[in-house]
Image 1 (cartoon, helix red, strand yellow):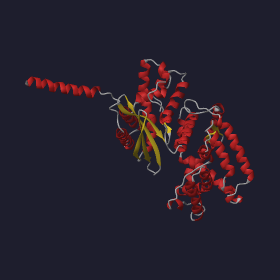
Image 2 (cartoon, rainbow over the protein chains, first blue to last red):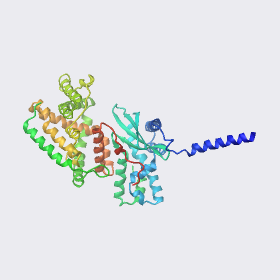
Image 3 (cartoon, helix red, strand yellow):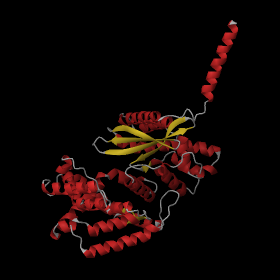
Image 4 (tube, rainbow over the protein chains, first blue to last red):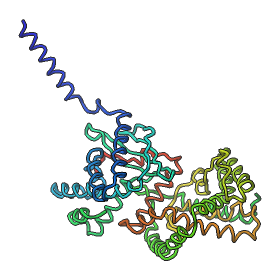
Amino acid sequence: MKMNKNITRRYALVALVATISFFPSSILAFSKSDAEGLIKNLTVDVLKAVNEQISEEMMFSKFEMIFSKYADVPLIARKALGPKWREASKTQRTAYVSAFSGYMARYYGKRFEDFLGSKIIVLNSRKTSGGFLVNSDIVLSDGSSYQAQWHVIDARGKFLMYNLFLEGVSVLSDVRVQIGSMLDKRGGSIDKLTAYLNTAA
Amino acid sequence: MQFKSENLIKAILLISFGFIFTACTQSDPNGFYDPLEKINRKTHSFNKSLDKILLRPASKVYGVVVSDFADILINNFTNNLSEPSNAANHLLQGKLKKSSNSTARFLVNTTIGIGGITDPASRLGISSSESDFGKTLHAWGFNEGAYVELPFYAASTVRDTTGIVVDFVMDPINSIIPSKYKPHTQGAKLIELAGDRNEYGEIIDNMLYKNEDSYASQRLYYLQRRRFDLNNNTISDDDLGNPYEDE
């Protein structure tokens, strides 16, 4: 009798764990406050890195860590490359994404440098297909303010930053323009592009 | 604020010209329509060298010579000169509140604000909002038209270029200010150009001299920034794209 009770309990526990772990991620989808919270944490970390008295190189490596934590870097890398991605082999893709991750940190980092002494206020968000668009104001130290909108998406059950719009200008489109031009200048060679990305800013 | 009939005819001609160009346009998958890219790129190199030898050095001089205080006065003065045009365009777009605000700002700042060099209207809570005839054409349903890079003027579209010309010939300020002062007001606008170039110095330097393809970057910045402005600072679902879509 006693043993039976234990078995029942164990079954209940297993069933519970199974339910939680196999629950479709779409039903467990994140909420508005999750998306806003992500951007709050991201911007706090970014401003902390910007305001620290460290070398540019160290700051960029901090940004790389911040992005790997908060952003869907592999997806951004793929989108920045465009249709060329389909032609690339698995090794080429891995090498490219790794080089892109450093490039993205430097590229965004150069723009974030201007945020020295500024405040980022997360205002609100709205639902979009597959994610949220989080509205924020960047108030620079001289009092001027800019609008920044962060596109947060459901990345395979985890919510991550996908794009940033500064005064309406998509940073992803901007990066895509840069990558496209680099690729053209290198005769469409993804290997040459990857080699260049390791040093490009 | 009486427009000369000659100017009115010119404006009507320009609008019809603009309509021909904007009525039959299609966008590429990026949402940019740039059939004149070849010519535009040539103009871009011209503008870039113009910036390098003229505007950029002038802006550096401006930065050194003009104090922050004087910069504010110059800014106020040229902003005030554009208020009648703002008022007219808001009116044409049916934005009565904004139109009367611009008119009130012009009256207050020109008188109490000593010819517009100070801005007491803002302190009185009369908020400013800029407008132009390009925005009016947008409000009237005209398409953006092709992207154009104008010599001396940089990025624009067919719709916005039409707007620039109409604003120039129809500017109500021309009928308000005696023509003998015209060189002064135009001079102030030129100085302000150097001031603006100085203010946005690093952003423009990065765009023109550090980016891989300064032409494509400028096109992107101008078109997306302008569309954002025209859509009351909102990003549409189209702008967001589809992150999950394979290409």
